[in-house]
Length: 283
Image 1: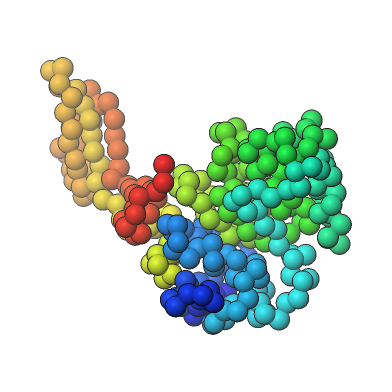
Image 2 (image 1 turned 60 degrees about the horizontal axis):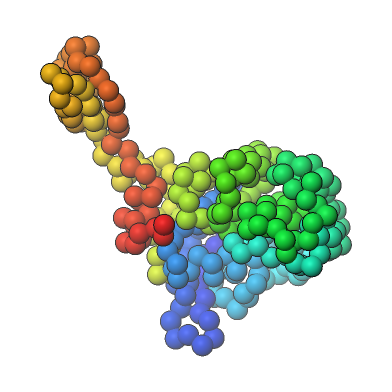
């Protein structure tokens, strides 16, 4: 769907490049996570891919054609949901959507989506009266207005309660199942782990890792199993390597001890983020 080769970009007033020669590809029907700390270049990269920034060096292809060869017809193909919800505050939710519908040749019926994300009853309320979570959900519906082939989602579930975040994630997964492609940035690593087929980590304008969450967790995790059990009223912890769990001693422990927990040494994407980027996720 997208092919990026030796992509570099420098803002006019800056001496240094913000994006420093990165390479990656996004397959059709893939959810691709693009992760990194603030200032690493991920937002700049997204702006380049959606043609908000244009004077880049290197090559970017969309559906086999140079991105620079596309005119505004490109926006018929994509949907974008920014981290900060954008809407006309003095218009109602429905008036906002009706306005943006006019920009597309084949807009979709928004009623099913509004009902699903819990905004149908508030469709005639002014967007300026919406809570942050409501604005985020409205923003997401707007991104789907044109039945896009590709979605660019920036922190799509940030600020949502667990129920609405679950609905949003289900809709993203269904979009992929129907052949859609997603470029996703987020600091919520549990969402990234659940949604993304592959993730890339960008640090100081350069890509440090690209792989599936599973492969990254194997690479950065420990091949061990930790067992917690009770013995004479005391909680005991023992750690076994993957080879040691095949031994009689491990099976004897399972059979004869009062086992309370079993944990693999698999790491989390949050821990990988910290290791790869060298910074902590914001709270």
